[in-house]
Length: 236
Length: 236
Image (cartoon, rainbow over all chains, first blue to last red; front, side):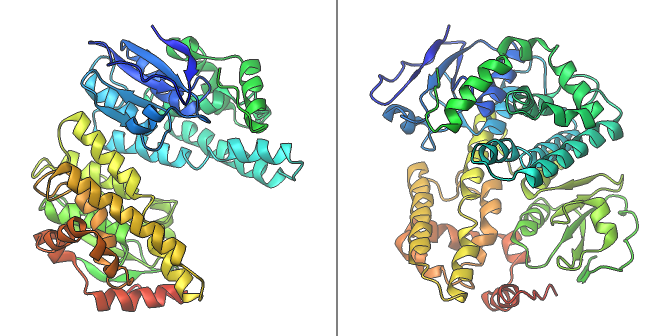
């Protein structure tokens, strides 16, 4: 259904999206693209994946998405949607099967506030490994990240639920998961020892069929991340 | 209906929100809070305003919104919603009168992509005046902002519509307006001379009843912004 090898500068643009399918432009190891892929998979949507070389972007791709980022969705009608939270909400609205966002406006707003809060956690997943690689003192950043994990843990305690939106997986869980899948590869896994509810959440997430279907091993993440930190990412 | 004078540290927390009302915590000159107020006004929602001293935040306010930012909404049920785009979408979902977001998922996604794009324009509205005040060379920043205005202008040309979401005002127009209301005060107005469609849009926006009802004069914005740049903002 999908080409795994990424398309780079000079490649030929793919043809129109087949009827009844949606296309996602992705990069195998991109956590933002993984968000859209998790939603596609969880909702059982028929989709095809085209991987993009993010260092040597195809000219035709920049015409579709001037930012050149992934994920981008494309429909058979040629509609183009990008920015991971926007793609995910779009998918949830267009495909009514297995709704991932709550229908109550307040519960939906709560998920969006959690997502906004989580967007301030993400930079630590890059700053710390980069700092470590450069031999810098990252203890302050590590303490900050631990505190952020503690806040997430507290959120689960206060809600008294297994997942961030209730006792079953909803959108917010898929939005946060990709970074936790990489926790071991990024050497953050031990930080979870101080946050048992959050750790339990990661264990429950690992049992989800969409998570399992799209998952890479810590070794695969580690190998990619090494090439990424070295400035020469191997997207395949 | 609303107290204009802002509440600071040591103030008493306001009581519950009256039935059939919604409360917005605001700051008179905050462009982000203005977004929510524009939506409240445009939709004819009954609301009360409580202004917050953003330098000396009331203790009770930080309990409602730990980020301490405005806007924050509070309902009679004690539900709290913050982050300006989240508050605006919440209001549009809860109050069905005069829908501001399109019902089509793709058109809605387009508005969100435009908003995301505009969020990269906003920092220039602060960097340039700060740079000017410090006697720095801001010609590069000014050129960048002019280019961003040119992109917005191009967007209106390509859409062939008066507003960013069509021929009538929709959500995206209100999300962008507060910064353009301040263009004269921030000495950016001449930048619009090179972007006639965008300039025309600002003129049409000035005729909107919600915009007119909440507007401050360039002199009032200038006076506030001076105290803001001096590091001692006068929130009243």
